[in-house]
Picture (cartoon, rainbow, N blue to C red):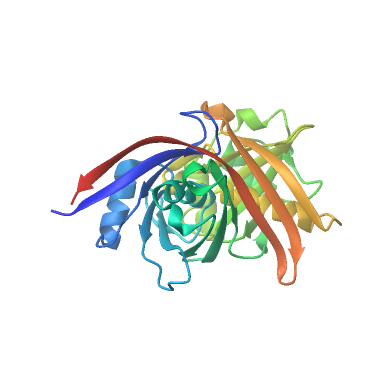
Length: 293
């Protein structure tokens, strides 16, 4: 029998049972792709990560990320949480980590010193790419709102990525809490636009203190996500794209409607190859265990 250790952590929170839970298999060498997918489905979190030796010894690790149904090229809270777990387990890695992922290299800066780290900030692996707009009238049924609830002052609903694709849509502040995913509508829109199986909709509304957000990805088995770092980074990059500023910093609150409030800090700046973004936050350890395969 093969034994694999794992740890779970709540990401983008300072409070246990808040934020977004993550399972990290800290040494996944020997697991097959099918076994990783089965373990991620069994854990039933929005994502589970599997840490492997790096292909390039100059990097810290290879990190593979699986949601309940498929492998992902990149994601936010899995990187923040994995860095937090590895910092405490392997302090010799230092306070700056480099993860090899399908979408490219992900740079991570720990908050706090190694074994005492309390979180991390990650750089998205790709500059902002805009992949096309979606008609508000087509998107609104997916999120249980009317087309008039979609705000288009800054941008129409848009497919965008800094490593993994989301549909970003601004909604009226008083409608955000009443939004709800409609599975049939998601399936119909995915069939029409073919943005991938996930068709993840990241809704946001602005208020005086911070951006409030929700994320629905029912086609990937995530009815709602309490904290979506990759989407938050994409939003920061998008908002900078539509401004004349050189950089932007945004505080994002997510997960409130789920009873798992999450706090994410996003920074975006204009680089030589386009708009780059980072996202960070704090973590809380929950439990650890092992499985025999």
